[in-house]
Length: 89
Image 1 (cartoon, helix red, strand yellow):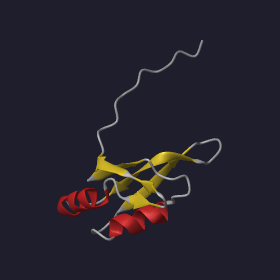
Image 2 (cartoon, helix red, strand yellow):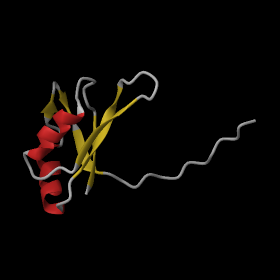
Image 3 (cartoon, one colour):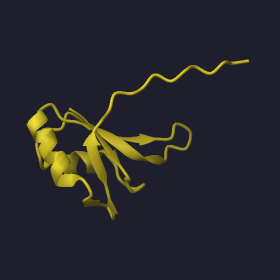
Image 4 (cartoon, helix red, strand yellow):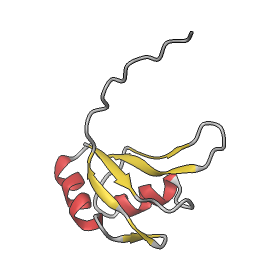
């Protein structure tokens, strides 16, 4: 299951996410989304957990709980919507 994690402190790393979610089960990937130019965190990320029961347990355990000083928002990720391409005039 792909999990969205929002309201991340800018100092949170991929390893921090993996550690927090790993307490609930196996984590196959954990990624903090960063700005492609500055490299700074955009304040959200995604965690992939192969076991749905463990993923749901992690969502319940971590939603609105503090991680590095900020209460994070955790829920199942929604599929990415296709955005229209901009014309390159």
